[in-house]
Amino acid sequence: MKRKLAFLLLLPTLLLSSCDFLDIFNANSDEKTVNLYVLDMIADNENPQLSDAYISNINLRFKNGEKYVPYISLKQYASIYKKFLDPRAVSTVTNDGFTNSWKIEIDGSVYFYAVISPLEKVVLRAGEISNALKSGEGGIQPEYDVLNYGVETESSYEQLGKENYATYTFEDCDFDYFRDGGELYMPLGLYDLAFSECSTLYVTYNYRNLFASTNADDFSQLAFRDGISYCTVDDQMVRATIGASMPQYLIDYNASCFLFVMQNFYGLRSHYGIENMKKYYQEKNLYNQFYSGVANTRALAFSEAVNMFDDNHSAIISVNSAWGEIARAPYGKGIVARNELEKRLKVLRKEKYQGTNSAFEPVEGTILYSSDQKTAMFYFDSFKYGEYNEVFDDRGQVKNTAGRYDTFFLFRDTFNEIARHPSVKNVIIDVSLNGGGTLGVLIKLLPFLSKNNNAAVNFYDGSEKVVFTYTSKSDINGDGAYTADESYGSDYNIYVLTSDCSFSCGNAFPCYAQALGAKVIGETSGGGECAVSIHYLPNSQYIYHSSNLHIGLYDQTKKEFYGFEDGATPDVPLTEDNKPMCIVNDNGDPTFNIPHGFYDIDVLNEKITQYSASN
Image (cartoon, rainbow, N blue to C red; front, top):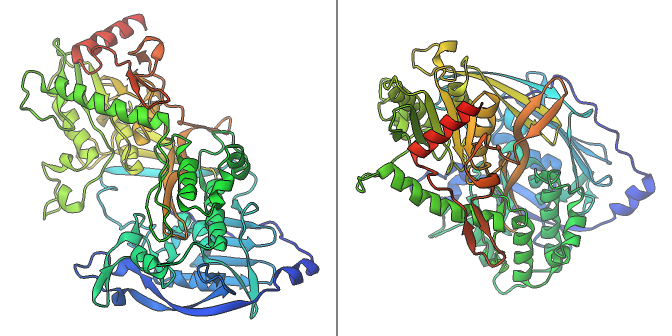
């Protein structure tokens, strides 16, 4: 959904004394002109030439003797977006000497507004830059695409907090800044970390050039030809640091960037009751290790600082050998248990779907029927949508094979097939190995479970304290209409089979199913209520992590939002006292508690019959 600000938000006044101003900006700097390249321009080329990605030159500033940390004005940073903004957008940067502000307008409406105060050590943000990007360059989807096919949605949002802006603090970070020629200069990494999440544009300096990309994957590994040889962003960084030891100022800077991300953007911080990440890491004896002169000590500390949350949505991913930070801490016991359970369940499920035919390879949408033909069961393991040519033929008609690539059409085909068996009363949708996927697909599937082809999904933006509600209707029977009688919630008793491996969208699906009147059978689902976000650190390592966007239920009467991190509690638990199906000890050894008949359609049918009789 595109959001715009109807008027310029009144942000708090940020004040400082004149004597502080004179003291803090008494600094000298060096200047270096570098090239700016946009990797999106060559990402799909068979023979990508770096020269074809050239946009402009930018003058970076550096503190004397500190050549690895670039400083840039907000005006310079905002200019990088020129290629990506909607042609109608007007981007304005204002510097009053004390603070910097940045505003993006389209046709007189403010879509984005931010204020940065280095002395108050805060960044205030309202709106999202991605909403002002031109089509195909980030936040705006083409008018017609597969994800939007067959669904009607309405959206609304409601402010919960008093302030309708996000506040990012860098109070615990060692970010320097200075003023020169009337401009306020701050580290490039601070701007990128503060704004990349709301813009989908990532900007990094690899000690040689500036690179920008809207690619959320590890764009630092994109191979391109620079002169006569192929290399990557990271390759150039490694070459620039051969024979050098990582200076302490850069170690301090990278640690500050990491703390800035975890304090302001790690979405489960409040779930774990953490007010201040610096103090938390100090208590865990990790904080000092971030500043160690030993590369692998730092690497292990950063990795453990993320892995300790046992969050499948969070990890430090890329490994850049420029400074030797390549060590990785082991995953938490919860993630290990989930991985071990997944391996075991895959084997068990395949055996049940194969039956006596060991040559049969089951796929998503394969249907099992109970012996009495009263219960049908099928599984799907991700929420995915296909490419246009995978779903539609040359005439724009849906292909018969669309369900192989797109979960919406998989659901349509599978329910159509079940409907050919009039004796079926119960439908079990197996998400026990579903690790998540695209939220837009979740929105399209939920109407199938409803009684009137109507479902609602709620998102809570923990940064701006806003709840978004998306109501949806789906064209379930493919007739181009969205009538109430198309859904299946009144035709069948719908059950959702879950395990601890049901994560992210695979966790939200059974939670919403319960809200729509369906029942959950199995084990408590695995959580993962937050959407995933990515932040690049200045040494081109990147963190993916649970973001500030939460999925859950919103009670409009009480004005309260309830997230899904604790999972869906089964109405029909299959383990005694709903105990976990896999527990890992301190040595990493798993103990399984998988009940007999977890995937046995006749056993599940009997459990459902017993549950129905007692309720």
